[in-house]
Length: 233
Picture 1 (cartoon, rainbow, N blue to C red):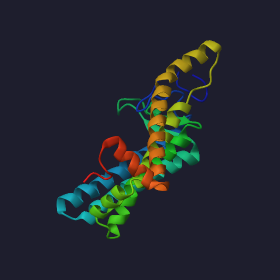
Picture 2: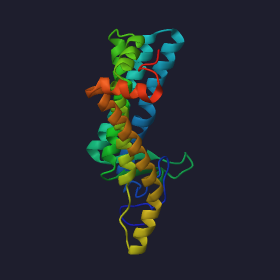
Picture 3: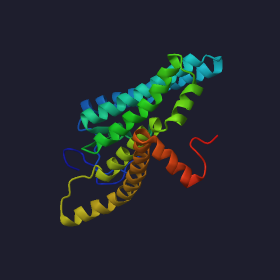
C-alpha cells in the first residue's frame, strides 16, 4: 500500500467503484468520520423523525418540513461532492478497524454524481416548499400531468449524470500494461451499467424537452403510440 493508501482496485460498497482510498492520517479520518455521520446519519435521521412525527400526529406541515430537510441535506451532499470532487463512504460495521472504515473516492466522476444527487435533493425539496407555501398535492400532481416535462427533464438529467459518473469511474492509476487491462475489466460492469443509465436518461430528457418546446408534437406522438391522449383520463 502506497502513501495515499489507495485500495487495490477491489469494488467497495455501496457502489462498484474502484480507486478509493482510506484517510491518509488520523486528522483526515476524523474529518471524514464527522462528515459521514453528520451528512448520512444525523441529518436524515432528524428529517425522518419529523416525517414520522408529522404523519403520526396528523400534522402535514411537520411532515413536509421533514421532507424539506431531507431534500436539503441530499442537495448539500451533492454540492459538496461537486465542489470537492470527491465522494465519502462508510463500509463495514463497528467491528471494522476505524482506519479502514471510511473510504474516499476522488476524481472527475464525483462531479456528475454530485450533480445527480443535487437534482434528487431538489426534487424532494421543491414539492415540500410548495406544500408549505399552500399548494395542495393534487394541484402539484395536476401540474405535472399537464406539463410532464416538469418531471421528465430533471429526472432524465439525473439518470444521465449518474450514468456518466459510472462511465467515468474512479479508476486508480495503472502500474503496468497488465494492470491497465485488469483495471479496465474491473470497470467494465460499471461502464455497461452507466451506458444503460445514460441511454435511459437521455431518452427521458429528449421526451421532456419535446414536451416543453413542442407540446402538440408530444401529445400527438403519445396518442399515436398508445392509442390514448395524454394524460390518461
